[in-house]
Amino acid sequence: MDDLKANIERSVLRPLTRIDDAYKRFNISPPNGILLHGPPGTGKTHFARAIAGELGHPYLELSAGDIKSRWINESTEKVNQLFREAAQFDRCVIFIDEIDALLAGRDSDLHREHAQVVNEFLAHLDDEDPNFLVIAATNRVDLLDEAATRRGRFDQQYEVGLPDEAAREAILRVRLRELPTDLDEGDYATLAAQTEGHSAADIVGMVEDAAMDAAERDAQVLTREDLRKRV
Image (cartoon, rainbow, N blue to C red; front, side, top):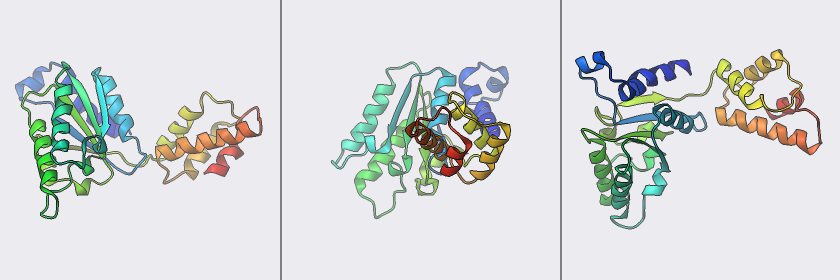
């Protein structure tokens, strides 16, 4: 995902970490929020944690379900509580998964409480000098309220798609490098080709299941056949 990492470096990390004369000259402001979207299991949460790690900021992770409540006005208060907690830090990263459940479009069929939650959250995101970066993730970007994706809010959107063949091979190598195996170089390429359409989470699960098979028969190594059975 070199292109995605390069875009995040240019648009997110550089404005937030460098006092750059060129950026100051053209009044380039760092983003308040970025949106990661794509199929389940492609690494959106991993990207959010990596961004926080690159920035060196405290990291708050929650899902939309942690904020939403069935009690009237409680969801709005939870939104305010989240940003009050964030205000305790000089800088921090807030990651919210399944943001579509929190910021779904405000049409006439939705409860007034939901509209209030959306309005309250977006008001915080409009902060002119925030101490936070909000990273949100969704599998359904089409469900988001249009106001959430306008300039100054989640206007920076990045698709985290399924890994290509090179990425799948890299994931396999990372997951298998500390396990005893009988794989040769050609096996990694073969498995990468055979796992087309798999997400990163699918590949991790495949390795874990194959390792369990090897452990159950008390094998000395995880074999190429253990993995091929799990493709």
